[in-house]
Image (cartoon, rainbow, N blue to C red; front, top):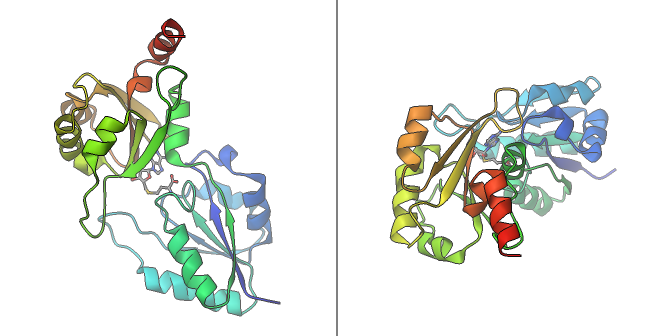
Length: 247
Ligand code: SAH
């Protein structure tokens, strides 16, 4: 039997947003390696698997990536059914691509299972349609946080006219605001900030580009949160009205 690892998305938090395929992988698992953002409630689907927490939360104590790789490899080579469970989707800012490549290079079979990414769940749970006929023709998912300090082309994003969904942006609100304003985005562009999307403690704060930072501060916005920036982030009804008026 060849060594195999499942890289599985646990969704944004609500255990009901788990896919049936993820549930099957958890049922079959002997070892489950989980990230911090995974809601442990989903582990109810495991039948006696060993659960190992390997969190990598920004700014906190974290497990070195290399250690996680080796752990997966060791268990997979022992013939164990290994599930690497990640918040949201494994390949949206989740290192799923890196982990899959590392394992495949060592002859390990990898099966990727989608999860619902936080940006989609956050928008849906506060009734923001990420695309809307006549209002938004596309969505761009970006992270405000990089390890190598590389810079996003905010001007291109500002000019692109798609809805922007920003991950890991809570500590970068002023930079996001300034870069998008400098890039020519309208100061009154609606922004929805959604914290703990899909969980009982979900909170949402509506603002606009100009007041983004002060409103987030007054709201005490905390991570994990996503930002939805675009005309669709006006109240859902208002965005629909714009669409209907231009139809
Ligand atoms: N793979 C994950 C993203 C991991 S990056 C996914 O597809 O959702 C971590 C970032 O995701 C957080 O900083 C935050 O911006 C976002 N995030 C994850 N879970 C969230 C949640 N329940 N609510 C809001 N944002 C969340």
